[in-house]
Image (cartoon, rainbow, N blue to C red; front, side, top):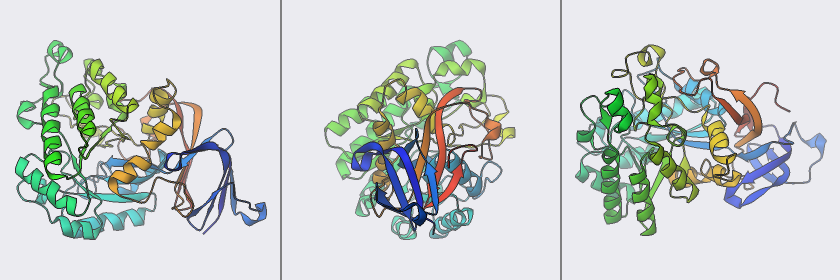
Length: 432
């Protein structure tokens, strides 16, 4: 396997508290080290990273790859191609496929297809309940043995409190987290399409109240506190939920959480356009909720930034707002949105932002990624922090183009993604 010398970049590795200019050497799929003495003739490839930022390969712990069953929206091949184009060397896929990922065979199918695609690392999140029906616990032990790194019924909450309690107890035996979609379904029935508030009232659209998220987050915190099991709050979006998690962390409850860029950059005002690309679950919230999510990122109540990449074919999204499916793609806009809306305005430093996209999700999932320490897998993301560009969904590597950010001018993006010591993505025209 080739050796790669990345020269003169600003190396940001929060796992080692490193933030300095240097040279990074990769050999045989592993990190050799920073500023290692090496002769140019002994290196197969040199990448000039002057003016660029070099980080551990980014990790997205919340991605919908759709395969098996909904290949018209996305496949493992196209989804992972989108991931490396966005700077992600590793992703965790969510099990709301058809059939769902609730057997060893399905876990192994995902792993096989990921190896076949040969783009990025794919970790499997398996179902909490059989067939995602919320009635009977899945075979947790068998799924762990097959390689599942976490458990979730996302797309729907683990609704039965007793099932959730038993799942937390069982998963704690394997030190695996449960990733839960936090929603009280009785509060969001009746065709709810957006956040319940002033805008939904003006538009005459049925809304999802913040309480639907807050109540379920409160329940899961209580169950985690009672059982000692690890619960991870998926795509947090309300001020109330952020505060509940903040207080729980102070008490030492084993709870973690994530936020998506759309929940710290957009508000329910966007639905005035009736554009279904702004329809997602949880919905875009109020300005106060956006500010609360920003505060949660700043004080580390929210320790992970992810995408909730949810591709849908054009013919599905191009329907009336009340029948179009929830969700947007996000793998290729996440990092630029973080740079544009968090780093440049000074909400987060580069090390803080990269921590939430590398070592933090790695630790929650229990995977040996997110670091540039010597001997680690040679997963590296190289970022141009000053590159100005305009989002064009038609240029996405993803099979689906359902993004609300088309036409947005952003700053910064990944220009090289290295996975296992091999360059898997290189932006046209970037230095080599």
